[in-house]
Image (cartoon, rainbow, N blue to C red; front, top):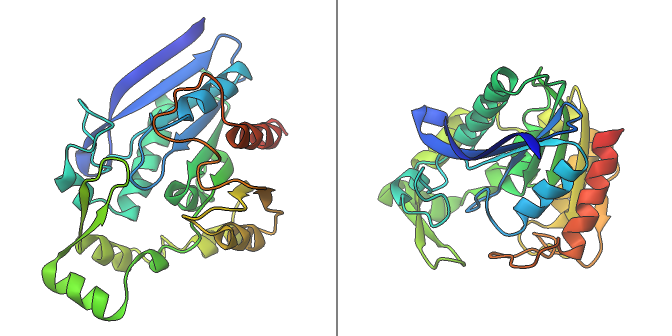
Amino acid sequence: MHIRSRRNERFEGADGRESLYDLILPENWNKKLIIFSHGYMGFKDWGAWHLMEDFFVTNEFGFLKYNVSHNGGTSENGIDFPDLAAFSMNSYSKELRDMELIIEMATTEVPDLDSIYLLGHSRAGGVVVLQSQHPMVSKIAALAPISNIASRFPTGDELDEWNKTRIRYSTNGRTKQQMPHDYYQYEDFVANRNRLNIEFYARNSHIAICVIHGEEDPAVNISEGEEIADWANITLIRIPNEQHTFGASQPWLEKKLPLGLKLVCEHLLTFFEH
């Protein structure tokens, strides 16, 4: 039994674009809320994230997970990226704004809220670190995080070609869609470079940070997790023999967490409880 459970509720994200979120508060809620943000080409219902949610709700935490507003999903379909025009105009600063709007919503709509803990995976692992000075956030945890946003963009002739054509594509391995990226994304990064400096916010955090990374991550090398941990002056939690999603995949049809992600959740529980 839950005192509050919301599924696929709508919120207004960056640029007023509507997106979806889930919120669960257990009956014996400890008044601490974990806000989870997915990574690049991700969504809140990907893989085993719902089981991660169950893990923390069982341990008395509230849990809120959401789709970033320009991830290519819509309020009607949050999974299959039907709105590639929105995806093409996504940016790191928009994802940062989405997170700030979700935090703001939580502080006004969640009753008896004591603490907000941010949890981000991959791209969002870097974005949560950028919230290290947010006055309403008490702890931050980054799973397989990126450490450098600038390195996500092409350079040299490839960047010049993007500027000329204004659009470039990457293939979505799950849906096989050609995902468009407008040159605006790079322009937005340049305009907001200081606010998007992960190293600065890791070095100057006002709160505790936890970084967890799989040792065999092929998507975001563990060296990026090592960098953030070094900047924050903490010890990186390394998960042996695990890749970018810690054993989970989409769809995840098992009724329990993959072993790697379960280990991640156990480490996170220790961090969030102390």
